[in-house]
Length: 178
Ligand code: GDP
Ligand code: MG
Image (tube, rainbow, N blue to C red):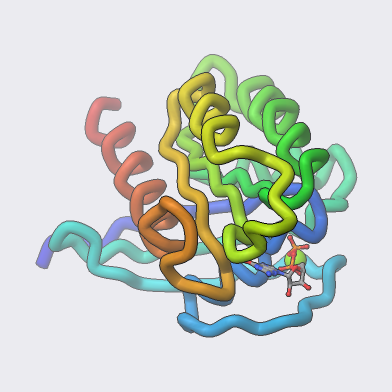
């Protein structure tokens, strides 16, 4: 098997969208209900993606960090998961400014991102249509997944793991052309 590159991924999005739940789902395939919303944690994980072992470091941001801390996190990462909650329109509206800030911090490069609409299991409470997510992702030229931290294949996306894997692939593609 090929070498093992280190890929640093950071998860961003308004507090409460399910960042911690998604990261824990990805790492343990389990759903854990309550996380300290103020906590910022990093995790290490290895996965075989397209026949290459990739070692990841994943930063689960708190979603309420100050400007300076957020900028530092945006500099730290190689790739970014931008998360909103399909039942919270405000969290969706937070995404474009986050992307704008990323562009600002990473200029002149465009940072690899994936867009994740979480809580797809809560269809009855949906405030953001799938098409809106797709349109935003098209605007940002990134992959889009609707998923749920509590049901592995809820929604249209290929599940939580696929979002992380695709981001790793995107980071790898960018490295290949640099
Ligand atoms: P964070 O602040 O973005 O890290 O959000 P958390 O991971 O702490 O989740 C916030 C709340 O949303 C918690 O009560 C979670 O149990 C809940 N939650 C997270 N993901 C999902 C999901 O996919 N579906 C549902 N129904 N609830 C979720
Ligand atoms: Mg959290």
